[in-house]
Image 1 (tube, one colour):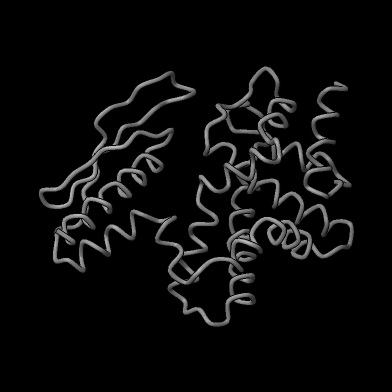
Image 2 (cartoon, helix red, strand yellow):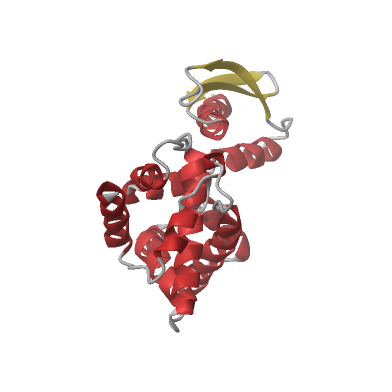
Length: 235
């Protein structure tokens, strides 16, 4: 029990927020696989909406020169599973999840940790509101601390490096080529740490890449194919 309390206290310190009702935090860290009557799926639903709203607000405030398309694309990159997984890792959410349900810890892949992060944001919102504080402001402070600098430093087309799949689709259309087609060619590794190999094809060109998720492998394959397309158009 002291170990569990210590892990939750460490998480609160990293968040910069101390819960008045720690039961909300524990609910946010309860994956559906734990078999609890209250898992974090409802909080995740709310947290997803809060995250998208606060990132959109920051983009609207900080990039008055951008059009809707560029803002939407960068927001999509900032709130994608891989980005949230990195944030969750920095917060030590894996340890916190194990602390709440040590015997039924969920698989620590990208999706469970990203979902838990969204649930934690919702828990902060509700906890702050229950104490009479502004829950939206509490969540905005966390999102701002994470994403304000990347938003200020981004160029309106900087999303292309982060969203190679969309960039590949738009490049293919511009060149009059067929739309990209993705296919899984291999799956290796244990269930808790799979390795996906994905192929992407555009016309007669194709390439493969491996990653810990289908999305990551598809993105890396798309980047490689973009390089091939660049080389073929310059030749």
